[in-house]
Image (cartoon, rainbow over the protein chains, first blue to last red):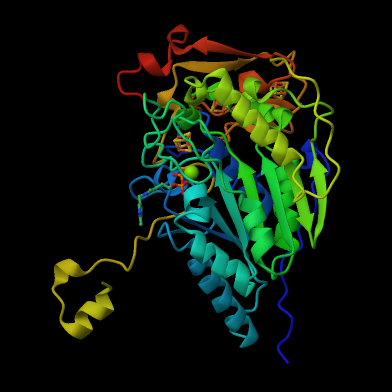
Length: 325
Length: 115
Ligand SMILES: Cc1ncc(C[n+]2csc(CCOP(=O)(O)OP(=O)(O)O)c2C)c(N)n1
Ligand code: SF4
Ligand code: SF4
Ligand code: SF4
Ligand SMILES: [Mg+2]
């Protein structure tokens, strides 16, 4: 009988004071000022610690992080093809499992973490991610969501919200709202289609302690887990770099983003406001929505209202508050 | 191609390079990519008013704020701070102020060759 593989057992962080002081995603990278995905990377790295292997598909977090012959990571990392992060992670995990089984590797299974962009996770990289989730590899797949194919100059992806101005969805006479489609629901895609997965959660850079604890919980689970992390991108969404955390917080206050955990079929919700603010308040912070009319904003509000009440989210949600017209 | 492989298969010497790109991992900072020279403004701290809440430490994408536990004060990393001012925005004690680099003798915009 193969002996059970020992994995990490990472402690929950109880307060800001207990957040590790050590950095593993170090200063010295070319991400834009105030980059949300860089902040995500820093927090995830802190949570996972040095006994980790990080990898990810082409995107800002690989292209802007690696400069000529240097990188900001203190742990082993790998830049995969944009389509195949899930497959590469599966291979790394399977190789460790075999080495451990044959007694050729004496340590614990390291944390294997994929940091994929929205494109590299649920669009061009979807099949490899889904394959990993389906086969049940002991890997944490994180989708850092900056809501566009950012690295190539902000093109629309399935995570881009309705109404956003991107280089592939410029608003004009024929299509005044810019992006006409509503986004894919990434965590529901994983939950709905992958029986080997037992832990899926959403997190936001606005709540770093919660984010760190979700990463640790996900890593402690045997088998695949998925985290969807809201990571505002000042360049692509067109807002002031100082507002990254403010914008992320506003997304939660307006229902544009919902923090939740799904553990073996049970949902729990975090940071739900007593009363939601109108989505307009979130949208007006970003130039990518500047061209929208009241009718477009009403369409977005209706979509968010429906999502907050969706039967797929089987927990009583806070009653929507009154909103100004 | 590795040296061993080149010798074995008589491959020309100029193709003798390591397999993949081998680069050293940084320990504290990636000194090969200094970003402090991007800054036009810098966050200046009023240590008296600072409550050591650690918000700046948590929210800086470039890991440029750290708590010096012995001195009990926050330390800022001038070589890498990009001047995004997230820390200023998220400081609940209002003890961080953005100041233009031109105000400093050694400010990065005044340097002939920044870093
Ligand atoms: C097969 C392939 N097609 C296109 C590209 C070009 N490309 C490089 S990065 C990138 C954007 C990736 O977007 P995402 O995964 O969301 O990451 P982000 O840049 O937003 O962080 C694209 C399209 C590529 N590298 N490979
Ligand atoms: S484009 Fe956006 S995601 Fe990419 S480095 Fe800049 S801020 Fe970060
Ligand atoms: S956010 Fe402000 S009060 Fe809190 S530790 Fe930083 S400087 Fe001090
Ligand atoms: S201005 Fe930005 S980069 Fe500089 S210390 Fe503050 S948060 Fe970090
Ligand atoms: Mg993206």
